[in-house]
Every structure is written in C-alpha cells, then in structure tokens.
Length: 249
Ligand code: OAD
Image (cartoon, rainbow, N blue to C red; front, side):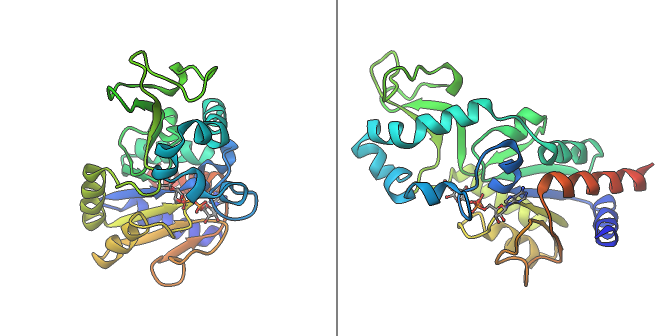
C-alpha cells in the first residue's frame, strides 16, 4: 500500500490541475451513514417514498417527520473528519483547487475547503416554498412540523430531491473542470448515481489520471480508475497528504 500511496502522491505533487469528487463515504467517519450498503440510509427508508420531490410536495409533514427532522439532527451535530481535513491540507499545498461533492452536509466548507461545488445542493440551508427565502438550517424551528417561514410557507431543504434537476451552473462547471483537470481524486462514492458518476468518466476520457479512494470496489474501479487506494477516506487521505508533504519538503 505504501508504494501505491507514494506513486499517487508523486502524481498529485506534479499535477497541473487537481480536482476531487466526493460522496457519502467521506462523511461516514463523521457519523453520517451512507445511502447504500450495510447500515445505510436507503436500507431503513425507501428513497422513492421519502426523498422524492413528489412525495414531499404531496405530504411535507410526513417527509419532515419520517426523514428530514432526523437528518437535520444528525447534520447539526456532525463535524469534519480526517478525510475532509486531508482535502483542506491538499488545497494548502497549492495542488487541489476544487471539490465537487454529492454530499449535502456542508462538512467540506466547515473543514475549510474554499471552492466546493454542491452537486446535490445543501442541507445547511432551507428554502421557503412560498416566498423563496433561504435561511440557515440551524435557525429553523422544528417544534412544529413541517417548519414554516414567517410568511406561512413551508420550508424545504435546499438540496436536490429525487425527481429534481442538478443545479445547472453546478453541472456545467463540474463538466468543464472534469474535462480540463489532469488528475482527479474520487473519494467515497459508489459512483452509481448519474450524472455525478459521469464526472470521473469525462475526466478520464480527456486524459486525466483517476485516483479512487474507497474501502469497496465500485463500477469505476476496474476500468476508469488508474489507481485504487483501498481504505477509509480518513486513513488514506492522511497517508496521502503526508506523502505529498514529504515530496514538497
Ligand atoms: P453511497 O452511499 O451510494 O456510497 C458510499 C460509498 O462510500 C460506497 O462506495 C462505500 O464503499 C464508500 N465508503 C463507506 N465508508 C467509507 C469511508 N469511511 N471512507 C471512504 N469511503 C467509504 O453514496 P454516494 O455515492 O455519495 O443523492 O451516493 C450518491 C447519491 O445517492 C447521493 O448524493 C444521494 C444518494 O441518493 C441524492 O440524494 C440526490
């Protein structure tokens, strides 16, 4: 494993444009369960029933009670882990420019990463369905569900539900960056949800080197990833950052 870490560190240290795609796996060590696999969210609730925009619009109270209130509690308490910090450290070496994240937890920004594309929006903010006011999630009152704005409208999280479009500016910028980067880190994503899963494929088809970090194989591992660093985001990114710093020192 040390050899492959050193090889990847050398690639990162000499990269011209390094970007990173992250998924739920990077936040597992912060206590947030992933969406798929053992102990995951979609094992306990049906996403089509609780995370589809049509279900929310039909019965916001049910979705707030059955899913969103618990999610807000979890996210309010979550703190960045070594994986998030590792990406901040890579930015500080002057290598990593942008993170494209599928996560809605805001932990990259809390850790200190400065350019984060929130591909699936953010749970850190809630938006009123009536007047479109956007307020921090921590400021909404959940004593009555669904939570309501001063105007009487119902709040929804400012993230992408199933059945909704990816914010067009995020999609365009992500595709552009993927086409231009020469190295892409892919951390903690099952790479099965489109269009996010296409981002590494776009990078690869434009000549980028793909370095994947995940304890489990994904559909990218065999064909798209040039290097697969098997392990958790916190451990692998810490080792990778140490190796990059050794090259720079
Ligand atoms: P998934 O839950 O599908 O995949 C999580 C990945 O993280 C898996 O490949 C795990 O093997 C890996 N993993 C688990 N623990 C890890 C750790 N400690 N370190 C590194 N990797 C770890 O999550 P996503 O790929 O992010 O969309 O899911 C994509 C989208 O599906 C989500 O953004 C969400 C969901 O439906 C929406 O809600 C729109």
